[in-house]
Amino acid sequence: MREDGAMPPPARYREIAPPPAWQGRVRRLWRYRAAETASGPERILPDGCIDLIWDGQRLFVAGPDRVAADAAIAPGSVLTGLRLAPGVAHGWLGTSMEALTGQRVELRELWGKRAQALASSLAVDTRSTARLLLDALPDTAADARMAWLFARLSSGDPPRLRELARQLAMSERALRRHCLAHFGYGPKTLDRILRLQRLLASAHTQRTLTDAALAAGYADASHLVHDARDLTGLAPRELLRAHGHG
Image 1 (spheres, rainbow, N blue to C red):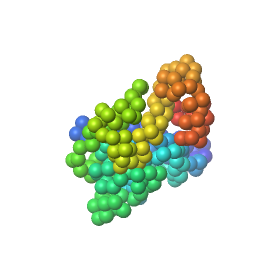
Image 2 (image 1 turned 180 degrees about the vertical axis):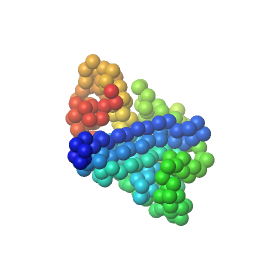
Image 3 (image 1 turned 135 degrees about the vertical axis):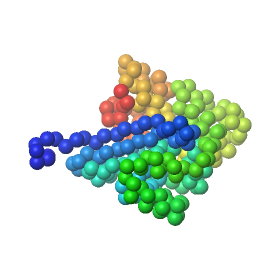
Image 4 (image 1 turned 120 degrees about the vertical axis):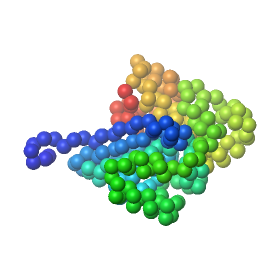
């Protein structure tokens, strides 16, 4: 507790849409301020996305998570991040996302001196962090097929993977290869992760947990229980209490 007797402020997370010029390459800008007092690690849920993050000292890429990851964040730390738009990271970073799955990799390992120069600028100009990160993005468009795939799998009723491959005019093997390069895992895993995200976003609008499961695309409540435990280590009700968007 602070000397004046007031409780320290809790952790705060805020995200906003990027400026129009970056919306084809950036999904969200976000800022996280950790609580002033020490607490347990933050549980980060898989979402099929890749983030570029500056924590005040390090500039790193948070690769795609296959399952929930625990992040130890120092009290009072401020993190600023770009959540890259689907289909951007592979071309921008110049490596397959499969190599980054479950990893937190310093950008200098991928970019060398360019990343070191950017980190130096971020350390000096603490008021323009988000803009400096945005300006570091090359003017490279997202892979249109992978952006379309992410959108279809994020929808409430995506078609089966065989049909998705047909609509993309590629074999199922080619679809898996492209998914590994752009998202870090195959289309079936991406589908499971995005279904879980649909549940988190919409469960508060449903009367019961079973209704929420069916609306998100689960076959039944047991299907939800299995996926929730497998992807996050939590039972559905625990998951929604901690991470539901309502």
